[in-house]
Each structure stands twice: as C-alpha cells, then as structure tokens.
View 1 (cartoon, rainbow, N blue to C red):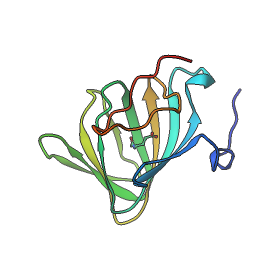
View 2 (view 1 turned 120 degrees about the horizontal axis):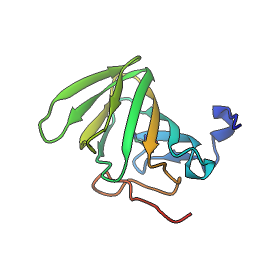
View 3 (view 1 turned 135 degrees about the vertical axis):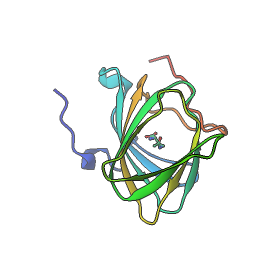
View 4 (view 1 turned 30 degrees about the vertical axis):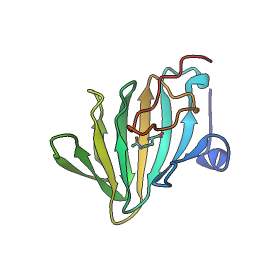
Length: 132
Ligand code: 9YT
C-alpha cells in the first residue's frame, strides 16, 4: 500500500512549477508507482492563463476549491470551474486554462501516467516518455 501526505511531496522533485509560475503540480503518484495512472494535486494561480493540448495523454480534472475556467479551442466555448466540477480531456482537447479570482485547487489523473520528467512544450503538450 502507498500512503502519502501532500506535505511529503512539497519541496521535493515531485513538486513541479510551471515555467511561467501559472501552476504548481504535486505528483502524489507517478508512473514508477506502478498504478497505470498518475495522480496530482495542481494549484492554478489566480488570474493566469495556460495553453494546454495533451496530445499524448488523457486527463481528468476535479476541482475541489477556488475558481477558474476552461476555454475550448478553437471554438472558444467557456466552462466555469469551481468546487465540484470535473472535466475530462477524452479527445485530447486543446484549451486555455484560466485561473479565476482566487487560486484553484485541482485533482488531476493522467493516463498514461506521467513519469515526472515531462514539461509542457511551446504547444502545451507533454511528450510521451516511454523509457523507465
Ligand atoms: C489542469 C492541468 O493540466 N494543469 C497543468 C498541470 C498538470 N495538471 C500537471 O502536470 O499536474
């Protein structure tokens, strides 16, 4: 059994900051934990905007605090996100993720799991890392 507290993740290599500090991701489960998915807490900073297009991954996101919005690309459709809202990128959906009036706390699951080494490229994509 794996039992972890978020405080065990903080300020370790499992805590990743966006290059522009729009978000912080604390990876509670990664590929090497052997679960077949990765499981993260992500804090989206208020007032930020992040371009995301996970062409190699599916992601489900559940908001447990704060607020923000998803802007679908290219059609511009907007979904307000707050405590209790879930969205799933089941079609590798390209979007902007906007922070709202306060920081937003998200629980995120990735399939295939992130290894922890991925960084968003200039197109908002995480590469598929296959080597162990
Ligand atoms: C919701 C989202 O995808 N935010 C970007 C960070 C990502 N969740 C991660 O790497 O944990």
